[in-house]
Length: 137
Image 1 (cartoon, one colour):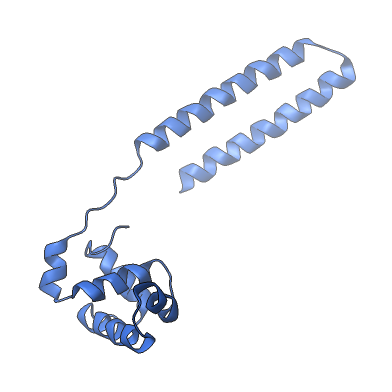
Image 2 (image 1 turned 180 degrees about the vertical axis):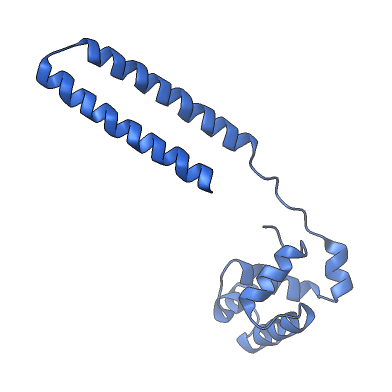
């Protein structure tokens, strides 16, 4: 994180310097400064392309779901569907409408999930499910 902050800070400072050089070249009428600014802009373009390619290569692969772990925890298929919808941030009412079951049934499934995952809250259940590779991250 510190490296990212440093890189972006350096880029911002460099841009400010470029703006000052541009202002100077405009005031003085010196066109050679414009060439320097163009070269620096091309260098920044290259840096941006390099950073973009590097981030694209280092993108994490999607985590695989451990279905054996789901079965060992005793999570039913319907409870797993509810867990996926909870991870999407849906409320009990929205989950009920999407899965065509009553809100009280959703509450029962959520309660069962909390017990099976040893969680106190829905957010904690999602965090535990991600740690155990029960849902994709």
